[in-house]
Image (cartoon, rainbow, N blue to C red):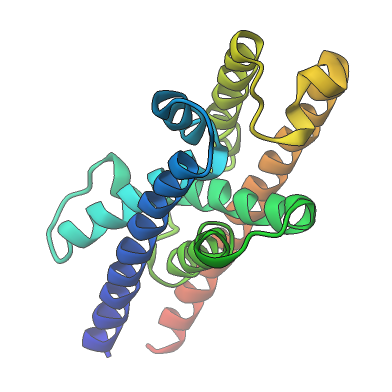
Length: 220
């Protein structure tokens, strides 16, 4: 049983690493060749998307987990609390895109395939990996506030970069069209989404952990 569990975990990791890095590299290629702007500006815009930054973090975590498979000790990227936080972030990527952004454009060909990987396949794979294989006994409710730091810093970066360049990666934070009052209100709502998902994830993690403990006791 233990062998099948480890094998399934490794299959998840290999799949996530291959699909994750492929999607990220393909999206970088697409944003460079499809924009009539200098290459460096295209690269800057590439790293301005929350989707890209979060998928990079997810791919790094999965890669580190795969490289350290069957090894003792945890680095920052493989700590259970880090993986839980990334699960929240990648969940927001999937939710916001599929509920709000999916209907704003119609990607074709390779762009469609890459979009599905970044906004659906990778989020589902990472969430599933967290549910099945990541320990949940260290989750604390207070972590939900710490996990807001990353989206908050991202928002500051986007507003500062947008004020300088005029480029905003998402329509709901486009200050040039909505103004700061509306953008800040939208950002507040998004932070509430992050906080709510964090609390739900921590709560579900505790339920899963308690269920495992109960089953363990019933065996004896």
